[in-house]
Amino acid sequence: GRIVSDVASIPRTTLLTLYRFSGSLLLGLTVQYKPWRVASRIKETWLAAQHFVIPALFLYVANYCNSVSLDRIGISLTYTSKCGIPLITVLLTLILDGPKAMPSAQTLL
Figure 1 (tube, rainbow, N blue to C red):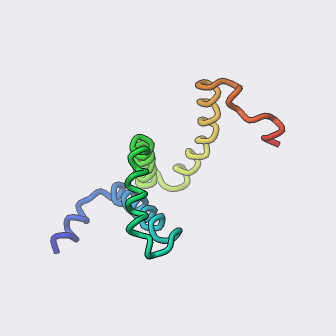
Figure 2: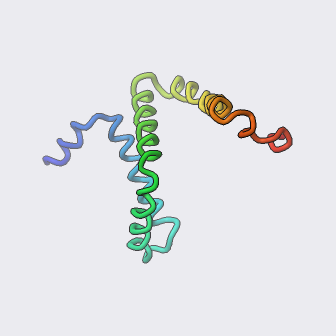
């Protein structure tokens, strides 16, 4: 009925992102903890989530962009491009925090 047609009108990229987040939330609420603790776990999650609003928004945007990329250019180019993320992370860490923020050579080995 109406719900199916409403869901069908939502772009695929948005649905993929919402599926990922809702699936992760459900797994986090139920699998790691005893089933009878789900209600208390929801309360704990809600209280903790207030501290992570900005990172969560960035993560949502990143996942949405990933879905758009998968939809538009395919899996091969999407994941080839994503291989550069660790390099960009290291470069940004060096630029923002300097070499002192990097682990020692011994740690890296």
